[in-house]
Figure 1 (cartoon, rainbow, N blue to C red):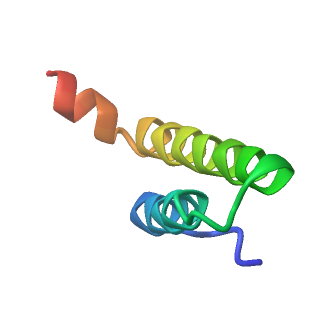
Figure 2 (figure 1 turned 180 degrees about the vertical axis):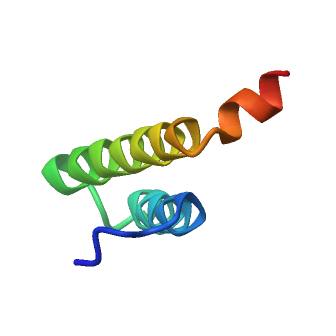
Length: 60
């Protein structure tokens, strides 16, 4: 896995997890795993934005 993903790429992965999670054939453990992955990817994207100073620009 590429560890130098941009926050936009991380959000794309999160969106893919969310789309897969909403599939009616996905349930139980897989649904929960995809939810955690989505949430984690969004958190990393937000942290990356903060480290890159993007969050500061939005707030100020």
